Image (cartoon, rainbow, N blue to C red):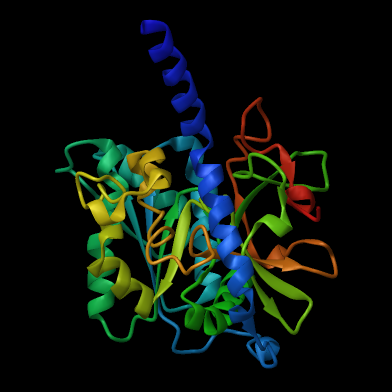
Length: 330
């Protein structure tokens, strides 16, 4: 009896490892039957070449004080002000000394508000305090967008314009334009994806077909170390389950059990947002990225720099796959 129980355990354990893959295959089979629904006309796509003057951003950056990261943090803030002069940046940091505070203030060359969170139970809760600032931003009608960033994510103006253009078309499909974190070796002209663990076949993913040389592909590795939301997405996030740190666990809500959310730690979950909430049929998450059919690779406009370059320069699961090879034709 014990022998058969051990065999059964091995079988179920093996099936458990493949459960996510099998689930994704089922989702893609559904997509193939309804793919005709996911088409958009990008006739006016390139008419947005700049940002409207009334664009007003609120940005929160979670920053565990680290003197070595100050240079990159300043680059992040400078880039944000290039998007819109009406940008409010809040740097949320841990309980630092007055000396560290002054050093932080001196290092940042644009106007920011440094917020020291003294009352948190754990440093790992620091990123979640950004939700209070999203609530305040949403209550200000003139605020058009909210951004949450890890402290080494460089979002530039071209990234923002890409998001605006894509969001106009994708929101009717309940999909969200996404980004891909990239790093670069010192002596290598190519960029490497941080979060792609393996090359992925295009024909295994849901997509949105367009009448241009771009199609929007469901991102199989949607972690991006940040999120960018307009007012509609802000409301959905704040009033839904995704704004709860326990989202994904059955103990929180049996209707929102999600293994992908469970697999992310508390810090990482803070920027997952709506990724796995209200996912359209045929897609594994709500994040899609532009694939340039002419260049046969992920479009550069959705690539955001991970300034720390901490993965490409060491042996790791991450940062091993070139952007141009991350999504491949079968």
